[in-house]
Length: 387
Ligand code: ADP
Ligand code: MG
Image (cartoon, rainbow, N blue to C red):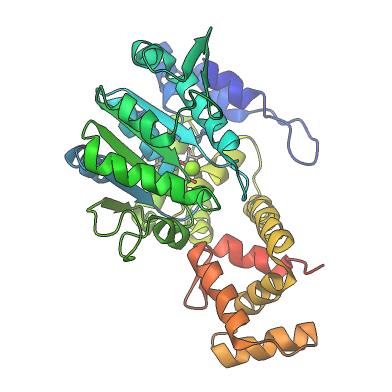
């Protein structure tokens, strides 16, 4: 029932109209046993938490189960491909206590205090299964439902000693969006991870990353001199759904809600959202809530992507905007892109700077080889502003 309320609370559209959620009416006239179907809302916009809600990822789950004893596992893939969902579902299925450290909000030049506060939060939410273990670690205190970690001064807990202490039991420690750990403190994290890799055989680390180049750059597995150099990790790359799976996903989602949606609508959505589960879910959810105009739904998606791109431009500079725009407009070669940016900016820019920007955008998994990895970001880039 919780989920019903969750979606119910969102029946006001972006332009302020109250919509009658047709699917709720449908549910109400379905036989009683269908109510269990409410648990299976494929179009729930939150990351999924159980296998029954996770579409088309059985193979990936089996691979994770088969590699559970590898010390470091990575799950990579573009934004909204379903990494957090896969991680949640996997952890719900293994009989090993786990914590998920959500790094999405870690700021770029984070300090130890920032990192430890996210660790505390992660431990607090896994407290029921980890209470005894955490209680026995000096530097950690449990205050009611909150876990406090001493990060500075006498008796402070270093990351390495934290991992060593957690190693007393079998445990999985997941870092969601681990590329966020880049920064002045990354060395400390990597040293602790490498130490745990060698000595803490009871810990499995799972690292996810949307910015794939940045994640592997951080880990430096093939970089001589990096603490993790040469260590074997199991890397799982999440791919988008193919057209058939996308179609089946949308059909299954609408069927769950008792909605009969025309084939053309499904086909158009399959085409526009390019097999990216997060956008397909977004589309399904909007449509089910009463929005019947695919172009409008797509525009809402583009708006979301645009806000993300504008953040990048704000942080990194307007040349990023010119480059994104140029590639979105179809500029496909180095020389023409350089000319494009120079025209827009009115200055001659050095090749190495342009090269860096291009490489960063690739490492952030926004473009590859002068193409966007997600068509929604391409459209957003046409609208991105440079000022
Ligand atoms: P990521 O962590 O890669 O950005 P999420 O796990 O947050 O992606 O998923 C993005 C959105 O897509 C969420 O609404 C989630 O519910 C949905 N989603 C992703 N993968 C699946 C899947 N395999 N089946 C059903 N929904 C999915
Ligand atoms: Mg995620």
